[in-house]
Length: 384
Figure 1: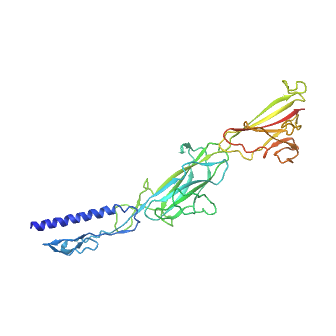
Figure 2 (figure 1 turned 30 degrees about the horizontal axis):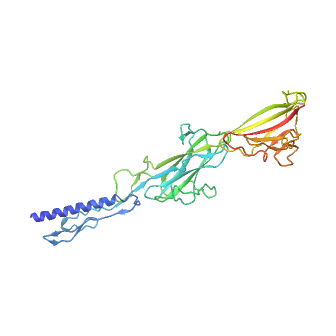
Figure 3 (figure 1 turned 135 degrees about the vertical axis):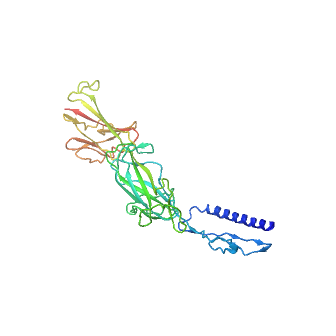
């Protein structure tokens, strides 16, 4: 009797050991596709009085030999885990100019669930001063905010060479996305011309996990687990199948300030020694244009009507008598042009219209770089 008891005890320990192995293997199955059947059985080999007996097996194919098998089906279906990641891509604001249209911020979407999912997408301008991204509060509102999906297959968040192409990136939702697959999402918006340098506008992208293709709403399964049906579990942060991410438009624009000065250069009596602004005196105007913004000012043109009761000094007071307009950029040596009457016949960018308006533009006046660059245009008139 004692021998039989010891033998039975060893069989029991073997069953316990097999059960522990099965649990350990199941814990490594994270990521298994939904609707996969997990089905295993334990086999017990034993002897009675040293004679090998017919092995017995647990469910689902147990034979209940000697009344040992329990006949309960242990097979079950893997349930559906709903999870997703949404994040801004480059960790920095998108630099834009006032009045720019179709400006793009880029997001990354990944299906971290264990089944194919669809995703509905939406984006809004935050429109609240308390919305802070990259340390900057929302200060202006974009308009015409839209969402588009990159048409090229996604290989991961570090993927390069992608950009929004209106002709091909036309999808506005992700109808199907396999488990562990990803997609790039573009938020496209227009910037008001009234926005000023350094102002920020924050946008929020929202992605909601949906039924593939139809994009019908998903419902989380309530109650106890069912081994024979695929339950739905929301596993994302917040447990609502919804994730959001923010990005930012940052105005990087030229910020121009203009200052005009006048200096009496000479008069007919005092000449260049303490000259006075009397008829016949020569006055030099200086137009100083400073760009303190974060972007280069391009296609810059200065126009200045010749004042009433004065005559433009076309006798070329600069460049050793060769030019009548002087241009300096910061501390660099001056460059010059000739503002001929009528039109820019010599194509140097300087001329005077029939109405007496001086125009100075390209190529005489180039782009004005950011960071406090000052360009000064000088010309002279004679008091009538």
